[in-house]
Image (tube, rainbow, N blue to C red):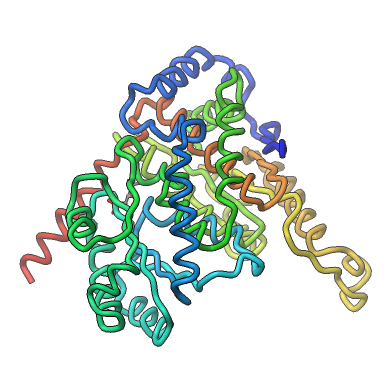
Length: 415
Ligand code: PA5
């Protein structure tokens, strides 16, 4: 498999010199990324250095979970669930079978979790609790609630065989509990932050439970890692382009997708870029729109509103399903495939928005396969890290996320 993502920057309006001018800066940024000396850059070499024994353990655990339960609930928030949900939503097929998969602890809604308990009632259940710190309120609350369900059903000992924990190797209360109770477990590597962790056990275990080929995913990431080492790689060009656009006042990046299966991939992108770039008063605000749905809500703004944004189109060339439109749809549409009409929408929207001067970046994704997903993940991780360096911020920390937690704790203490 050697398919490539095709990055088309020709529709963005940045002058090529603006990108060329950043060559030296990009070289420095790349060196930093690949030096192995920067904190939280373990994901850079991950596709080459993946521990094959750990991968075998992940695949074995996934098989066991598939035979143990009818319902598998993945508990985590932010980087501890978005990558898995993105992959499962984009790639899961009926042939992959396996348990129903739900996510919990990605919000604090009593309504959401009450409805979840109703959905899983009476079914054989396994949990996967994912938290690098082990102290995140959302996942801790959901884990206690769902663990109670397991205790009621299987007793404490039986529950311990159905709880899979993914957390720090040594630190945190989740690791303590895992060791005490003997949960099967995996490690979130020390040198990989949450939003860069989808290709570790954090993403791979739930993705494998969904029957998705994680080895092909890692191969895709490896191919992209190889490609992104070369000078003038697509990831470099895109990083330079994004920062040039930002410097011209384009402070919002709108990720647009025409396949609803990419909804959570776009959510993952929002987290990746938002948490990595938005700091020190800098950054591009990442937004996501589903087309053509949102053309009937946000299309007006994009066409005619305040031009503070650029668009990044995620265009799937060969989506997995299709239908032919019947005669009754009229001459223009009859006999055409829905995917062809969707492609016409892609081209039509680009032409219309470009006519008003909106910079547009188009990324052609050959198909929704595990391999392409792995490539995309690595591609955007690299683009994001390089963009952060070009913009003078550390793309691997998230100091701002702590403030709401501190304030929330104060409110809880006062209650
Ligand atoms: O990217 C990140 O670091 C964050 O989004 C974390 O993944 C998120 O806050 C969850 O943290 P934890 O895994 O410690 O529960």
